[in-house]
Length: 403
Ligand code: PLP
Image (cartoon, rainbow, N blue to C red; front, side, top):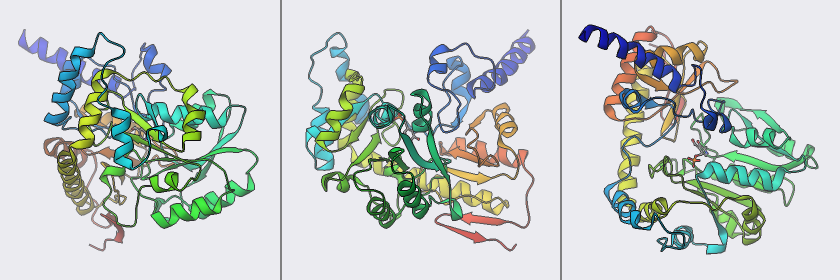
């Protein structure tokens, strides 16, 4: 009997893992609406909670440790407002504005920064204008453009998988009349590579004056590179720049849905009619607490960077090249198509990233707990052979390995 049960749960687990990754049949209409599994978008949950709990979740760049005590406490205290509309909201907009040194009129809240990306897209692309950006990148804005019956001009990445700023400037000028918006994901997802502060300035100075630029800083908090900086000062300078930020990553509130835009008051007013303005009471309180708990965020950042360095060093020593990430995920070159490999990992209880065309022979791996990263490395070594000679990248630079 126990044999039967374990067989069932074993096969159930594999089916669930494949379902989780969007590889099996699904009747989840909500997920369909959210464009599941599309390149650049997070896969949506489709398993039972038991199956979900046994997987190592290294596919959606989440914070595996969850919210700190301070945030949990703030959210727990906010349950008492769950039956209300006009409740004290922890002054979340004021707290975000204070955090960035801007006014409340410069902040627009969204149910996750995903909503903000859609709102920016609708504001600037309705009527057939195009979004200009690179591929691969976080493709939500490109998909939204398609859903409102327009398109994207997607440029390839340049040398060393970096965003090619001169090429973006050239395209922005050549196609100026068609473009409604430039999208810059910094650091970029899925590569984890930053655009330097000098390059951001070069871009903003080089594109046609007045062309809106959406800078997605979802992974801002993980960056260590001193050549990178937030672009919020450009908003304060009065440039047509919109910064998207999220509480889903370092603040560990992905399931609670809170993000925001920082932009000029004029741009915020233009965007507001397209936003839902429907943020729940718990996350408003949790978000305000998260902004204040800088110690927790510093410790998450350190754990992420340490685990990323450990894991990528092990892969490099095993002969596989990794890209120099500044985020809570990294890419490894696997030398073969990713799609079947995702399934091989899923069978071993590890969920890894989806295909990011045209980089379909790279795998994106999110940083999980130490135990999850050990499971990942073990699975990697079971799936791939050691390569004695390789080109390996180490943190921050690409090196040629000779051993
Ligand atoms: N932007 C980037 C670059 C992302 O990677 C993600 C999620 O993975 C988002 C935005 C959307 O996140 P959320 O809607 O949870 O804020």
